[in-house]
Length: 195
Length: 432
Image (cartoon, rainbow over all chains, first blue to last red; front, top):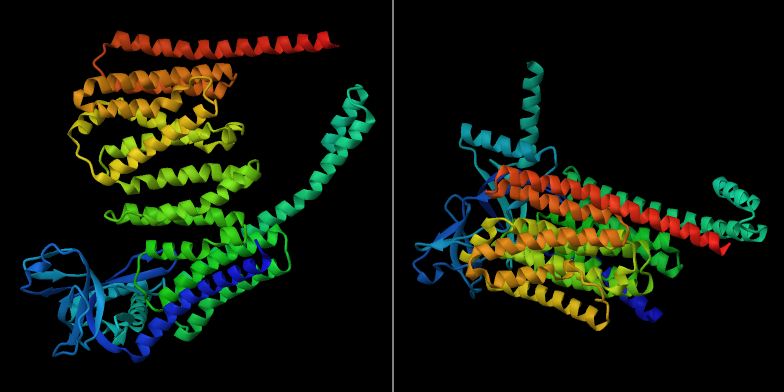
């Protein structure tokens, strides 16, 4: 191979390798800076990924939309979910569509696999929240305990812009989940030391 | 210098078998080979170092340092990638040796994965493991040709296999089509390697991991009906025949992963096919077009390789292992005639393969192949022990005959070897 073509190809490859993660960063930062913040009610569970570490999977309450449109029956594929805020300030579905609509409303794409009886079900894409490996499991346990004992609300703060949805943090009664877990771990240690 | 070698040379000199000139030449030859060795060791340790530190970075990242700010984490995410790129560029501009090229390429490939992982983690970017592995292999694949790095090929294949398994086996409705492209991408490199350096270590390793990757991944292209067994039989038949190509056949058997995997796979699956359930299920099964097309393609490829071998006049001795997959294919096509002929003929086929391996073992004077053949027959009989309505006496006689067969065949080979030894000694004596 010609030396100059070789060098150019090598640097092109280097640029692609830099561009891919940089573009990921740019898209997310843009949505975080200028996107609209929505709160999604959720519940966490804890699995792990060999490369990206421990994360909690978020089971969202908002996962379906009722419609009279029969064409949704047995539909499988991507669905555009348009958002609004409910009376309590949490995210709610305004409408769903198979194609992009000419409205200024915020939206994101979700995958829909099972639709019947006028109900469109979908999985929200931002369902992974990466956590410190020492906190992920306790996050699941502490949130479950908190929800049994009281009426604490667990929600995910998501910024949405032009179809990009960035999960910023998970809160339990307006307290970031990291702080909530730390408080839970401190409390547990104190009890264990007392025993 | 190797004192053992010096001692042996002194003994040969004393016995007047070699001249002192030859002894000097032998010593000089091993001396130059020993000089070349440190470089190879350096490469191995360099690559190991890069591999371990790259994997270490991934693990440290996976911990998730939530005390750091988002911007600091993002900066740190790009650090290993930039270091890796600088190391590779330095190696290219300074024309560094293999050790540098291999280590820096290995490190960079892992750094790319680490950076994407960290960015995904910082911004909680959705996406499962398979999509991550796909992007990772896509933006590191050109390294195979640009850096001509041996380890890049191996890492690429491992990641591609992982991608296909994650998508195909864990998300059942998804077929890992991109795997085909990932696999095809390394073929030109592999073929040119086989043509130019077929004796190299990498060629030997790839002769194993290439077919192994195919064997692992093939199942992810099907829906799990009985056709999957037929599909694998076709694949093992194809692999065995590829192993018979002149390029691979001249190599040592342990370097020929195609032949070994093809043979073991064929025997294993055919043994399963000697049971009744497979043929009964096969009659009632309805198939998906994708499975049928892939199976047909594998059979046609196997036939094409046999055709090529015939064209090149490489099929002088009949070898049942090469045709076993075709026989099963024909039996499968006639499955609607009933299960009985399928079961009976498959039993005969497995027994035939066992006997054939015994024959090859005796011809090649190889105890390994001889006993492999006997083992096939034994496994077949053990299977029938649980499966048939034969009476105890008959089964007892069968077992005794196979046991005697073991002794007799091994004795026959031993006798043949002794005879050969005597012949060669007498030939040497007559020359003197």
